[in-house]
Image 1 (cartoon, rainbow, N blue to C red):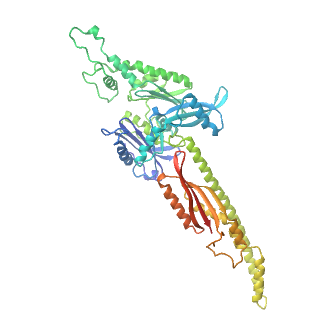
Image 2: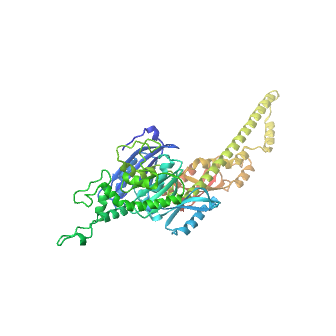
Image 3: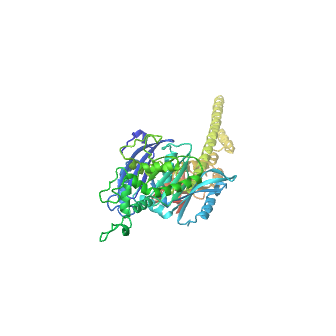
Length: 587
């Protein structure tokens, strides 16, 4: 399916790309956020891996680079989100004491460490506070905590970094489905929704309420359990009871043959040929053979429903087997719930009408994780590359920046007010001067040179001096100049200035001793300024950004003798920043 939105709807907007690297194929979905409550589908693509190309093989990086760059196109603003297998991410819902928010992280760490011990040096821990609940009458925080191996995160992150397409985020399939609900891509009901995924070796049941993943549980049974049940049903009877003398015993049924027989149930799958085990069985007989294994999974789901103990309106059923309607109906009937496949491209199931194209329902369902990732946002999607700790640090920097901006605004308002006040004084003085000129014109004779010198001497004794005012607002001029020269990716952390000595000397200087207008003489009359800050962004360009910033300061008409005192790269959270200290003199 290839969709093309008008340029006016995507111009200047950030394009979101969801990437799902499967066992044998690469799936990608591209979306754009039109408004706070609406997303549009731009494109989707499914690619089978070429022969000998599989994840973590040497040729996979080049394959991913070629296909992903072609899929992303010429868009400038792109956010790429990738799927990590849910088996690598352990999600737990905890009830912790209602501690202050600045103590939640520490509380979650120790509660989770007690329940499921983990190595904090090898495991990433993040959490999301869902809501406040009552537990036996005591208020508590309901927290969703999840852990993932740092090594696996780094492998996936490094894969995309090496091809020049760095990731914005990494998440899992349960959170991808959560995105579908939170963005209203899939219609929600008042009651909770369950999603049952039957994988090859394990299954997982997730519960969503009001767009949030409120409970999840893994089940150690899946499609392979059904294959083993079918293998047992296809096995020939005991040869000691059925073989006559000299007759060869029939060969044993392998798991591969049983798997082929099971997958022949899917519409459009390769049919069995004569001689294949199960060829003479009807569809109903095959399904009846796997029912005991399926029912064991359903019993686990029933117990999880009892533990959840809240109304559930429907259950979505997806599996590695594909879409097999009798299996989906059986699950719904056994659980007494409305059941169906999770097809995010079905017009009747989505709040939007994204146009499903010509793909089969299995192909559309397989795109669900990639679509969910393409709807991701750090505001509501758990991100293994942007944890709660990173968010708090970013908030602190934002608060500091907002504080500086607020201070500059206040200073600007005060300065503007004083300027207009002084402008009024100047206007009054000009009026007074005009009046005096008129009076002078009536006097005869004209003022002599001696009279003018005497008036100048009296004027010199007055305290009004333009230089004093220039020194008084020197600090505001310095802050304004720094604000104009500092780009957004450079954050100023500390400013130290010493204008006292220069101001005192200049204020007491005689006209003959006054310095030139733009050149501060030697001897300490120039003001001293120390600037400390950090540079954010691409680690490879931090030094270049610092050099450009120093050149900007050197080109300023009010700074001179700009010198870099210290610079060092330090690790802050999950990224590197360049800390620096610059000394300069102010004219």
